Figure 1 (cartoon, helix red, strand yellow):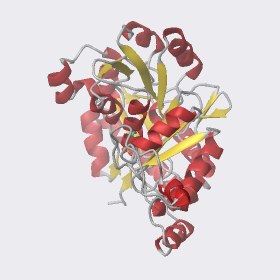
Figure 2 (tube, protein in one colour):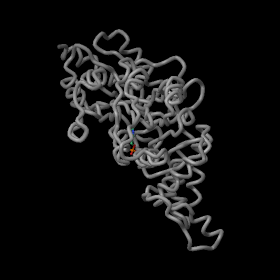
Figure 3 (cartoon, helix red, strand yellow):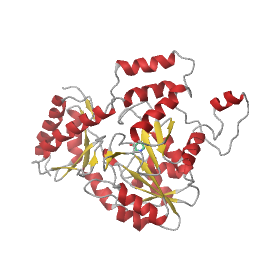
Figure 4 (cartoon, helix red, strand yellow):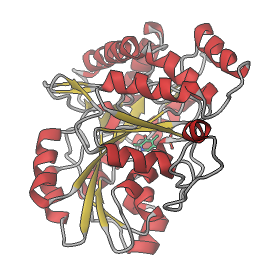
Length: 380
Ligand SMILES: *Cc1c(COP(=O)(O)O)cnc(C)c1O
């Protein structure tokens, strides 16, 4: 049996480890100087004015929902083809996630379906750059503007991707990133919300620290014990050694995105002639982040193909079970099958193939060979 090939994996070098160790030997291991430096690094890279580093991508989503003021009775439009956290963050605030179906060629939220979902109660739209492919932000901005809605980008897949020659980070009111190990860069666990709006940034920074408006530096400056809790918040802080890891990783991001694209080209070419496999489409005016390389299988038993690839040590995955089909959403909101037929059909067909910067060409070829070999055996 060959070595195991996961669908995604981090890349940690000695310089990353040194950066972490340096902080561990310093006086501040949380909320110290590395916090600002990591936030600045992500802001400089994305072009956003403000960044709030938090303990996970989920925490970043929660902070964003709080900052735009989602509350009981409010509706937020979300795609079903995402990790549950995108919708859960709305539920944390007492709001109702409303699922707008996706486009079949790229599984990104369908702007026409968003329009159909808008009601008097709609406050915001959260879109997802699924697999690392940026959404069509100009269309989304037009809808948000027309109806006076906040536009939130769950770009947890897509740090480093661009839309119309501009990096993701400033196309929505707030953009969120995750630093889980399979994501474009990692801090172990971690996330960041970036925005150009000072007021939203301030709210998110307070939210990650119990709603406290005065931070330790301001307190040091005024030599004071005083602080104010203006809104109830959480402890969603990121440690300084994680920030050091994140900052070190940022220096490698462009190279890693290029490598992910090179891997994607190998898959594109290999599957071009295979009738049973369709790769998701890639628009001309974007740079894809390729967090995932997703294929749709046709005329084959996807479950059997999945099983056989795992047997070969190729740990393909399925992203995602449409969120509205999870028991919580069925039971709590009365959602169910038939709400988002495009996502539901896609779910029966999709597989995420291994793609990460450190994957070797030989491993990519192993994946391609296995997929093609097994497809011949599991034709329906
Ligand atoms: C990973 C992910 C999240 C959650 O990020 P965590 O850092 O794991 O909390 C949210 N949305 C999407 C689309 C993700 O892929």
